[in-house]
Image (tube, rainbow, N blue to C red; front, side, top):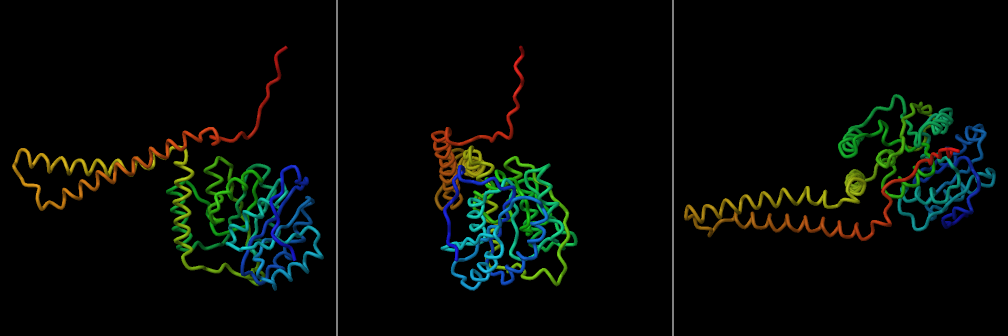
Length: 325
């Protein structure tokens, strides 16, 4: 039985071409799913590894995977303890992976095996290739989440809940470092400037799809909070005053206008200010607006103090020009 392993240092990484990552909980047919995709991975003619992250407390699943590991040298089991969720497991697998290209998969068949090569090959022209399953009817929750992502970030992939995707190591490592749900990885990668493409793939036959995604309560609420967190971090991390100012300034101005109206009525129309709940509400709005703006100013001071540690951009390539003789 394997236990949780520390992160591999960059100088210790072997030269692998592909890392296949599987982070799953509650998938009873996980060994069968891995066996289903193994011939396709062998036919890619690429050096690869398979990292499977599971809950270390699930002794039955760990034993089944250990039996498969003995027959599959490329397979490594990571028993995570304590188990948080599948998204945290994926982040742990990304840190342990060694391949230049990374393929993430679910614990059940989502994509026809023959389309795996197309996903991995698409990385020759993009940084992240997302699977879009043909004939997949979008649910209401998927449409709502897609619309929210388009509103916040300007774009969204069509098949949000498909976990099968291929990515370059820098793109996936940077996108998964935010620690949110896997469904947001394409949106994060696109917002960070990576080239994200959708690849149309087929679904496996109905009798081979095995385990299904299990709906968990409060999942939609968590997705909403993750989306709002990403919007704040990706859009306003380096300029917090823009966010807090956009919220606090209208509140402050509305409160000032109402307060000014009451003062004008008191001075020029001799209207008493006693028993005026609107005045108390207006004063509270002024105070609240100033506090929100002050939070933005404090954030600007903190960002300015640590600005040297924050990278404004990443260098994709360095173009050298031959010196003129």
